Every structure is written in structure tokens, then in C-alpha cells.
Amino acid sequence: MGVKKKIGMLPGDGIGPEVVAEGKKVLDAIASKFNHQFEYEYALVGAAAIDATGNPLPNETLEVCRRSDAFLFGAIGHPKYDNDPSAKVRPEQGLLKLRKELGLFANIRPVTAYESLLHMSPLKTERIIGVDFVVYRELTGGIYFGEKGRTADTAFDNCTYSYAEIERIAELAFKAAQNRKKKITLIDKANVLETSRLWREKVTAMAKDYPDVTLDCMFVDNAAMQLIQNPRHFDVILTENMFGDIISDEASVIGGSLGLLPSASVGNKTAMFEPIHGSYPQATGKNIANPIATILSVAMLLDHLNLIDEAIEVRQAVKASLRNGLVTEDLAKEHGYGTDRVGDFIVNHILDGSESGTQSNIQMGLSTII
Ligand code: IPM
Ligand code: MG
Image (cartoon, rainbow, N blue to C red; front, top):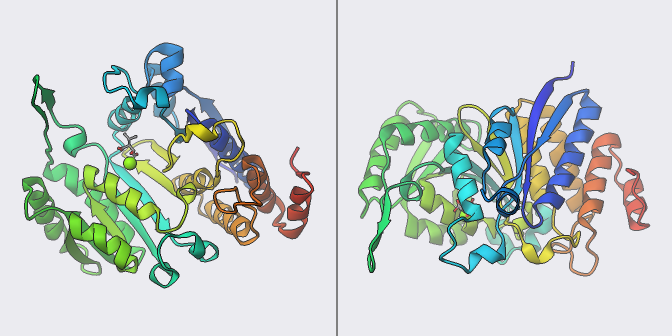
């Protein structure tokens, strides 16, 4: 028996629409193979929404998200706002408001060093082989959302955390660790910051309820170094908003391509799934953006909807595309395929398990999906 789900689609800016289009193709393939019904609703966000309505997150978009079981987000950001510190409205405000309004308090970013891509990483192969960890970043608190202010020559951003904010994300991280290698690293700056000491206190107390999970605590400066020197050390990383922002970008280079990394932002109701890369304005409309991060975000979305076999199919198809070199130019300089061709290969793999046949069609420029 298939299921019926409402899926929001927020393509956003730059390459967002192109990669989300591939994500939708994959969802359609899964729906047809498993007899599900996915009902899509599209909405504007980011610079695209500012251009159309003056607001980076129109209320209508929030409503689309609220009534969705889950939603796929492309990317936001446009150069015309990046270099203008006086801009009153910014695409990023849309994203921050979306997280806060929907209570998406946990950002989950898995980092895997794929066997076939080890050579792409700026780190030595022996250092990254077997790397497989996941970052749990707190997403609706801390310095991002604290009181801010400025006078002519002074500015401040407050960082506040409560037990409740720490507890709800730590719970998710401990549970994730129980299903993985049973290890959590809390990243903080408890030698300096009061909020970090609160995190340590709470998380250490909670660890008693998860006797099968080992907790270690690491200062963020040391963690920044360990991620490069010894990335296999990590299983589940738990951290606050700002440290998580920085650490997760650093972690993303381990695997060799930003174009591969998916993420989930979850709360109590709906959840958001997005590639971690940005809007990559220079690539917009060129059909060169890597759709895999979005397609792996679709796999996380399927997991979230408890469609576990479906998510496995998507991940297998992605691995087949990597194995067969059916990838965009960021992963294969001279012989990169178009964004849509990579999507076609993955879709065909899901639909009929084909690798070689599909590949030769694609090489000839023919897709079996019209
Ligand atoms: C991220 C991004 C955002 C953040 C920006 C775009 C506001 O860097 O999702 O990591 O800082 O959280
Ligand atoms: Mg970031």
C-alpha cells in the first residue's frame, strides 16, 4: 500500500531551481515505483521572493511549509545583496525566519567519504578513508537569535541557551548515536563561555540515560584541528548554532565536493531538506550544478517520512552514478555530464536498476526519460 504525502518545494535562488527539479524527478520515480502519491506545492523564498514580493519569506510560503509533511529547499542568496552591508532585506533572513517560525531546531548533516571520490579530497586518502560522521547543529538559538544592537561605534550579539533548548537536540543526537557507532562528541568552548558550560553540564547529565553511548567533550578550536587531522575520530558531533555553522562547512570539504552533502532541519512538525551548498550564482542556468546533494536530501526526506526502503534505493542509485562516473563537472573535469543527465541516470537506476544500458544512452545524449 502506497502512502499519500504533501511535499513543499522551495527552489529559491541561483542553481536552486535546477537541483530541486532533479530532486522532484527522483521523488516522482520513487512514487511510481512504490505506488505512493506525492502532492507538491511550490513556493517562493530568498532573492526570488524579494524580487516578487519584497519579502524573502512571504507568509504564503510559510503556510505551504506548515501544511507539508516535509519540504525540499534549494538554495538562497544573490550577489546583489552580498556586498551591500546596508541592504535592509536579505535573502538569508528568509532562511533564518523559516527555521525559527517552523521550530526547526536541529540541523543534521551527514559527512561520508565516498570510496570512489577519495582522490577528490584535499586531505590524504589514508586520513579520510572510512570517514562517516554526522553533525547535529542546534539551529534556532544562540548568537544567531539573541538580542542584537549597535550604536555608532559599538555592536553586540548576545548568545543565550536554556536547558530545554539543549535537551531537545541532545536527545536526537544521543538516539542517533545509539543507531551508529555509539559515540558523541560535544563541541564547545567551555573554557571561556558560560553557555558552553551549560551545554556541558546538561549533556553530561543526559549521558547517564544513554549508558551505551560514550560522550567526549572537545573545545571548538581543537575540534577544528581534529576534523582535519583525525576525522575518523568522530561519529556524532553535537554542537551549538554558531560552532555548528563553521564546523559543518569545514567538515564538508573532507569528502571532496560540497555538491554531495545533504542536510535535514527537523523540529516537532514539518521538516526541511536541503543541499548544504549555496546558490552558486555563476553556475545558474548552465546545467552544470551537481544535483547529488539535493538528491541525497531527498533520501533523508524519505527516511523522515519513514520510507526507509525508498531512501535506500535513492542512495544506491547515487552510489551507482558515482561508481560509473555519471557525475557533473565538479567531480569529473573534462567529462562531466549535465545536471539533468545525472538526474536521469539516477532516476533510471531507481526505475529499472540499470547501469550500463542507461549509461550508454546518456553518453549518446539520449535519456530513457523524456
Ligand atoms: C547555513 C548557512 C546559513 C547559516 C546562512 C545562509 C544564514 O551558512 O545554513 O549553514 O549561517 O546558518
Ligand atoms: Mg553555514
